[in-house]
Image 1 (cartoon, rainbow, N blue to C red):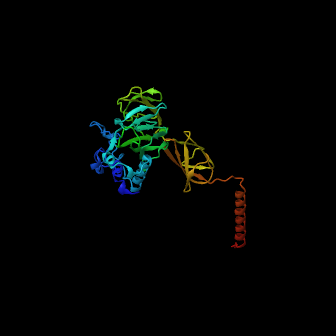
Image 2 (image 1 turned 180 degrees about the vertical axis):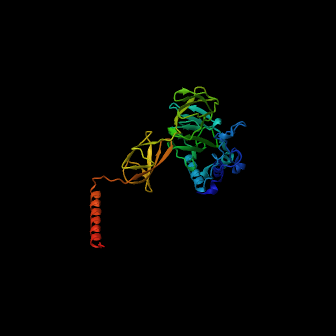
Image 3 (image 1 turned 135 degrees about the horizontal axis):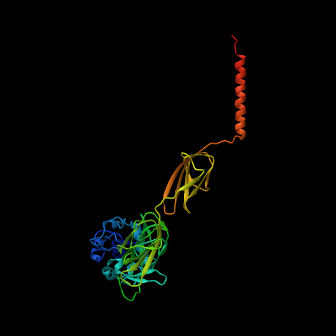
Length: 376
């Protein structure tokens, strides 16, 4: 790629992607120093002064700088979607372009017929998500992007290029960084490149880590049920979980009547256990031992004489030392140590043969002693 011909747009995209201090709303003259520092609440919102410090996660937004190759790929995608050679563009339009960071609260929020959420930018571009920004969900999340969008996705500590659209199923914290621009041929010329941060967390159906559930951005908590019983809501922006059970939490849009969403999950912090038959005495047993997990869908891992694997049956038969670990769907685990001793059947031919050999050896020994005996 000929970087000398791409310097205007490359400065904008690099400034929008490389997070630094300050605010990303600078014109071309200062876009090289542009950056942002979003609040822990997400997507660039400044935290109120009375915000509880326990909710702040300063490391969440600390992005690693993209490599030159990643930036070049973003630029390639930009010009591919614009469907024009960068040399044919009007330099005056380049110089009028700005890199603008948009908060989620600055975008128009519209409901989709299928239950999703459409976020609309000032230039008319938009993206659609199955959950609102900042949602904690136990289900998969879908994200649909339109033309004129490039970006990156970080799940936990791994950053990668974002596909055009996607369905996210793996557990983890997702941070989507989008660069959105108006495609060529639009009726209203908008030469801004908008940066949008969108984030959500997938916890699965059962979880043992959550202590509190914050409301998504632009939403408040309207109802909480624990095992079907309505719970008191002391704070509309965050609900502290009080115990294990099935939670159903409903959120209502703060600035749009009738727009709501809910999340369901089971909080489970109790480790499962194994029942043994026969019950080992002092951590030891003689003969085969059968075990049964206390919860369905548990996985039992076995460390047998130093070799680790997962159990394919519920019966231990081989002699030796066992380390058993039972893990439930939420990730809770309990460990056991067991030793199975060697036992023999009295009718076992090996025992009979050993007895005959010992008896014969004893008889030969007695005969030798009598032969060498001296009578005094």
